Amino acid sequence: MIAAILVGGKGSRLQSVISDVPKPLAPVGDTPFLFLLIRKLASYGIKNIILLTGYLHDKIESTCGNGNQLGVDIIYSREETLLGTAGALLFAAPYLKTESTFLFLNGDTFFSGNLNNFIMQSLDDNVALIGVKKVKEADRFGSIYLKSHSNEIAFFAEKQQQQNGLVSAGIYKLSPAVFSAIPENQAYSLETELYPQLLTQGKKLSVVELDGVFYDIGTPESYAEFKLIDADQAFIP
Image 1 (tube, rainbow, N blue to C red):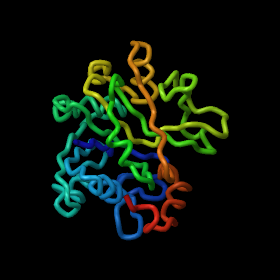
Image 2: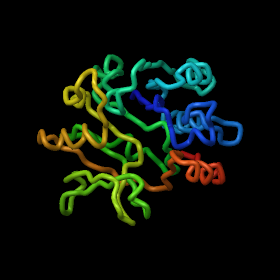
Image 3: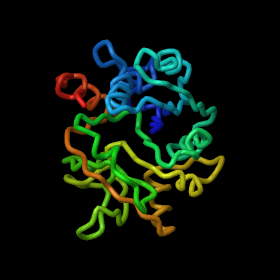
């Protein structure tokens, strides 16, 4: 299975802390954050990685190379003009559209638990499976609401005043069928535009709730918190 990792955004909120490197290369001790994510995938036998680059692409490419140092094979899909999360995915379609399924991950989130169940889960009649986690500060992320007594998604809600909620953990299992719903040559968001659009088209999207701890390094505060965790506990498969 191929895993595509989104690493092309500017990470504006984190630039006050790491202005000289792109967010996915934020150091955790002596290790770039992205290395931890790739090693996690490799531990499940996922050795084919596509990095969706854009902002400061040269630093990501020079740091990660062809993946040999991480025990994986890395290729790059480089956007010259950033077109959002779904736009970046569409730009990488030539590498992915022949796959029956593929993984798509945010390059700034990490999950400490066992991902084997999610990776092995069949799409069945879904066009997307979304790894989710219940969190106490759902207002930072936007929430996912399910149909009654089901794992099938009913609708998505924008960031709002809400304490507890079900949020995306930044890992998705997708069918190439999603590409036809992404407009060409315009900025398009995965979670605020593509997924709601798929629902309106009558497509089925479901969630898989993940065990473990969900980490997001999108803010200086959350990045500082991540650097304090026990690596032996967080990074085991």
